[in-house]
Length: 570
Ligand code: ADP
Ligand code: MG
Image 1 (spheres, helix red, strand yellow):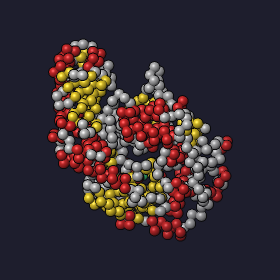
Image 2 (tube, helix red, strand yellow):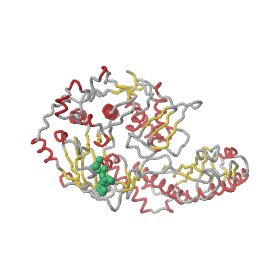
Image 3 (cartoon, rainbow, N blue to C red):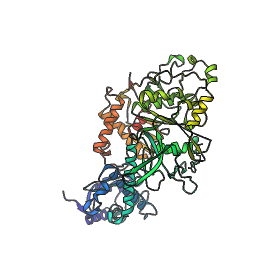
Image 4 (spheres, protein in one colour):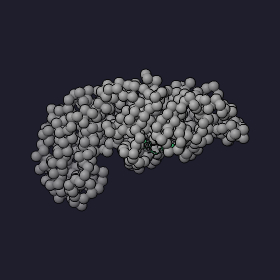
């Protein structure tokens, strides 16, 4: 197939001038722009509608990235991430006005502070691919050919050549990006052999500018400094020797006065499942890849989850071995969140008192005296946390400033004092011995059953009206799935809307290929994740979208579990 040249594209565009917007549809196809190939994969029907999808392919003969920069998957993801950021920066700031609506806009997905695999950029031995959107120019609903020719013939090539060619970028900055990310992955993958669930480097900056600004708090921040007894030394493949606080496996409490930085530390651990860009402050703050934040989430729906380790003998004899509700309470939602995370392989639970149900976390001696065990359905987490570790090897890191009842359960106690952590394990144990809680333990010898669920494909319907699949995602908080809304606002480890978008299409993929009512949920998710690993994000959606971002099985499960129409095989 011979492609149209850039000049031919230009004449084509000038020829469309003044025609109705729909005539742009004829542009769909590929164009040889000399240094790169431009693909127009989807053409918008209207200047105010979602913009058109474009893609460029730059062969390595032009892009010239040294193979070293993408020789393993950590580096390839990091390099692609770097290029996405360069492209994103280049499209910020004033763009030439090229007409009404989205006319003239060039956009790539907005990267967060996390370095993630995204469909927006890919680098291989053969070349670089970038995916972005363009707003094809119009005045009113009439095509402006000259503006379109400038957009596709000048603006796009300018950005592409400035951001996707090694020669036009800072070699040292790229090197830094790639090596820092490789070190982060290395560190995370070595936590287990070190007997750790997380590592927080000395000097790390944990606080963020605000609840809505993920960038580091700079001047005012106290850099992290490990207590001597928890300090671990590691030799990174690229970055040399670093030290930091190792959080051991088992049960760890983070205590300290209000406003002393407890939740900030936990949040950094939550985000430690991702690598962060150089300068973020959390480059070497890493957590076990399966670490999962669990919290209370009253109002959520729960479908067929065995929450019996925590909750039994509900009023009216409601079963808790396959517990369903369309409106969970604080405690039942937190129990379900934990059991669902265990179902798909979480080995570390992260819990913050700020977002927990009190009656799920503790039940003290006085309350035990007043409300007999057979009148209280809840076995509090404090009575199960050790069994969870003993029976299933699941560690817990828990922020708890309000109750000392957990001292008896903890292997490690870290106190934050004006943001500075101290190892107070020995003191906490001495206090536990001196002031007994005199609680009756309620948890029994064992944690209890983990019951795998099988999901029925019938309960999942992405259609709406005439459309077989209608999905919409605007933020990390919600997926519109057909006529349903999946509330993800309590799924706290999603950082980019693209992850929610990919999860939405992954649910459809899972339903079409793997959900047969037989396979346990964990097996279904493994199959989806295996497809992603071998075929990339495009296996979820064949439309060559540039707006999908990698996610974990844990978050995919979390979304599925919050679908209110979900059905399980009982
Ligand atoms: P806690 O959970 O102990 O009540 P937070 O973690 O919510 O405390 O932190 C309280 C405030 O202190 C937040 O505004 C946070 O951004 C800030 N903060 C946390 N850690 C640091 C630090 N290392 N340096 C400066 N400010 C910090
Ligand atoms: Mg807090």
